[in-house]
Structure formats: structure tokens, C-alpha cells
Image (tube, protein in one colour):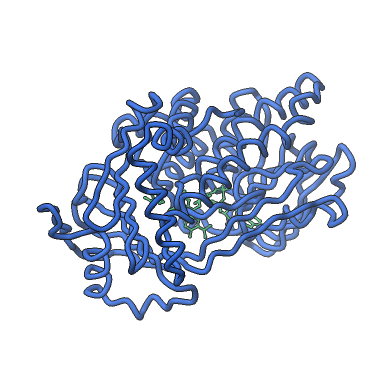
Length: 391
Ligand code: RFL
Ligand code: PHB
């Protein structure tokens, strides 16, 4: 096979990149290890930043967000006996949208199919070659067991945190940073209307809890749990009791309504960055280049921001033979990546409890400051609602 851009990974980064390139008339082929059904069913992120929504709307992917998404002015931050609303629209003039990654993925697949784009699902043994030349290639075994090769001008690794692209950058060139957190999230999806109008991020001596949502009838919750937690240790009753305690059921008349749990899983949390995000004719985008803990809701938004920068850079490189934007891509993307890395680490550190009582006092002091000072609140709001793409 021959194409201009070979894209590894059909998650949000890969499919959105293919969509943006096609708008500039640049051809691509996407290869994906999983089946289309598996990718479509994965339950992950839930919040779109202001800039992500603007970008998706500007490229014809906003209709379902406008019809089914839920615009939120802000979030609640709470600790025992106190709940405070931060209104991002008042603070920084930007809102966020509740619109699940599953829905984003479905919109991208629908657009990809409508345009007849080439996505190869169910591949194995993906490998990249000749990255130092202007004829790089990707090889893989297709679902029928046949060896395939895609010859391209550029290869983009959108293959997430367990992909192969990132390790194709030679060790002598790449630098990596990592932080592994001493806790995980137990996440559940429940068929019950949300008990809140906007997300609640709760600090509690028993551990962090988050009340999120997917729609008027589906709620999403997370509980801080120790690393290595076996999901079967958490019965439905234990989950709802833990959420009720941490989220403040019966405090000031607030009630948490439980319901049938339809999905549950444990997510480990880490921060990771690899730089540069380009080596020769290989570019990295999304989780392939960086990972954030989910507390700041940044993972999906960073993936969108990366490809929004990368698509015009590749169009200029391939259409006009201008390399300026492509040469600047890694540095430009990494400025925003590191800002989001810091914000995600900061939100995580402020809200997750440890065994050290000194930490708890620092966290409560920080929470009181963020919810009572307009400077503190605006800092959180600006980062949460999201910085401009290209920041
Ligand atoms: P994705 O979505 O992981 O897509 C990468 C795709 O590449 C495929 N792949 C390969 N394909 C071909 N050859 C190979 N060798 C391949 N290796 C991998 C994979 O099958 C996959 O389809 O990365 P992308 O596109 O960069 O998008 C990033 C976001 O998905 C990610 O940042 C967020 O979902 C992170 N994340 C969350 N972020 C939030 O903001 N809030 C959340 O609640 C939240 N929950 C999560 C998450 C990530 C999770 N992962 C990765 C384990 C929950 C989970 C479970
Ligand atoms: C979610 O709804 O899955 C979600 C929302 C906010 C976060 C993380 C996850 O910070």
C-alpha cells in the first residue's frame, strides 16, 4: 500500500488526524490492533475543553456535541462539610462540555466511514522502518494473517500508552519523565440520573471521590483505591457506601442516588512525557507521547490539541514542501503538554489522600485558598477549561 501519511492507532488522536488531513486533501491510512467494536466500546474520558469543542465544531464534528452534549459552567470542589462551586464562565469566560470519549469515537468513526477512509482494524506485529529517510514505512500482519507494508512520506504514532511508535525513537535521542502514583481509581458507570448538575471533586480522609456523568440517565463515579486493588473486592454496596461517605450524602440535604452498575474497572495513574515528539519522519501524538493522571480531565483534550497542531504542519510539509511548522511541532506541542502535566499532577496531589497527616493539612489549605481567592479560582478555571490550542 502507498499513502502520504501512515497513522498507527485508531483512537481519537489517529482518527481525528486522518479527518483533519483529509480536509486539506492529504491522504492517510490508519492501522489499529483492536477491532472496531472494541475501540468503540472503551469507556474513558468524559470532559471536552472549550478549545476541543471549538475545533471539533470547526471541522464538521460538532453536531452531536451540540445535540447531546451538556455544557457546564464549572465544577464543585468539596471536603467534609464544605462544597464550593467554581464558575469558569465568570472566572475566565470559558466553559467545558460533558461528552464522553465513546461518543467522540463514534462521531469520528461515522465521519471516517462516510468519507470512505482507509482504516485497517485487527492488525498485529506493527513495526516502523526507515524513519531517517523521506520514504518511511509501516509493516504489520493483517487480520487474515497476511504480511502488509504501507509506504508513506510520514508516519504518525497515535498508538497510545502501550504502542510501538514511542520506542522507535532511538534511546540516544529520547528523553523520558515519569511519575507513578501510589493509588488508582475504581471507576463505575451506573444507570442512574446524576445526583448533581455539575461534576463534584471531593477530598475526604477515606480518599478522593469524583461524581461525573455521561447523560441525564447515566452517571460516572470514581473512588481512590490502593494500587493493586482487585475490582471483585468492591461489591455494589461497598461502592455506593464509599461514594455516599466521600461525596457527603445527607450533608446540607444533599442526597446521592444509587443505581445499577453497568461497568467497573480499576485504573492505575501515572504521568509520563517523552520528548522530542518527532524523530525524522516519525511524529508522536496523544498518549503515545504523554500520559496524565485523569484528575484534570486532560488526556483526550491533549490528544485533540496535538493533532490540531500536527495536521496543518504535515499539510504544509507534504503539499508546499514547507517544513517550518513540522520542525516546530514538538516544541510547540510540548509547551501545552507540560502545562497540562503540571495541572493534572497538581489536581491529583491536592485531592488524593496519603498516610501523612501533614499532607492533609496542606491539601485542605490549598482547597480553601482555591475556593476563596479569585486568583486561586481563576488559575484552576483557566487550566481546567483549557488553554488555547497552540499555547
Ligand atoms: P488511545 O485512545 O489509547 O488510542 C490508541 C490506539 O492505538 C492502538 N494501538 C495500536 N494500533 C496499531 N499498532 C499498534 N502496535 C498499536 N498499539 C496500540 C490502540 O488499540 C488504540 O486504539 O490514545 P489517543 O488516541 O492518544 O487518545 C488518548 C485518550 O484515549 C486518553 O488520553 C484518555 O482516554 C485517557 N484516559 C482518560 N482521560 C481523561 O481525561 N479522563 C478519563 O476518565 C480517562 N480514563 C483514560 C481513561 C485512559 C485509559 N487507558 C489508556 C488505559 C481510562 C483508561 C482505561
Ligand atoms: C469522566 O467523566 O470520566 C471524568 C471526568 C472528569 C475527570 C476524569 C474523568 O477529571
